[in-house]
Image 1 (cartoon, rainbow, N blue to C red):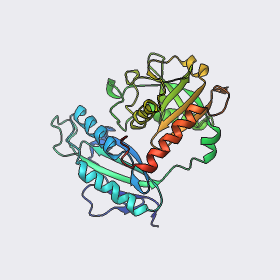
Image 2: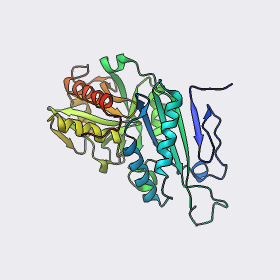
Image 3: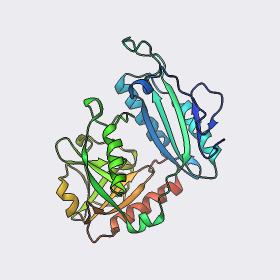
Length: 296
């Protein structure tokens, strides 16, 4: 049965295919070793948001890992085509970039050409009540482990800590799992950046805490600066989450999601606060005015 709610497109195929139609080689290193890079985007007005920032991060990750350079224009064109196929519905977009094929695996020479696969599917069904009343989170028993021993600023598919934390949150009926890093400091959500409001100041863990260099995190910090809100990037003790007046998660798909409870303990007054509401409004104004995701 054709599934035209979702589309996939593998490099080399002449056209995207509905549902699970695209094929990836069994010799692909991303499949064999879990070392592919990936980016997740969404559309507004059926156009990819913050596409340049996501391609920049992909390119930086490929350079750091010694992969071939990703074909930026080809990838951008593929995502725009997939978004068009699902229009006027909004889409969750994802692309995966593998270092390419190699066999036998013990050969040391790196492939000369990477391989990409692109996906388009419906957005996650986050109801308006999540943004109006806030969500509940847990603190995961799993620690945020820098992939390969270096910062998760490189977005690699092989992240079992995040996969296990998401499963843990689902099993406990929570919206998101918040992870600590190896030193016991607050790190990030399993699929989001974490922000707290402490004594009126917006605070988020620094990249050096071993967190993803999130595109949405950077946008939130830029919007807060524009609004004249005091901000800080510093290590955060787990106890500070319970001392916060407000808390929220930030990601491409979640946008700015208010958190009102962590481990059953109310955050602030137990409802979304004014700073969270203000930043969410500014973020949505940005997405309505400019799908590039660049602040003027």
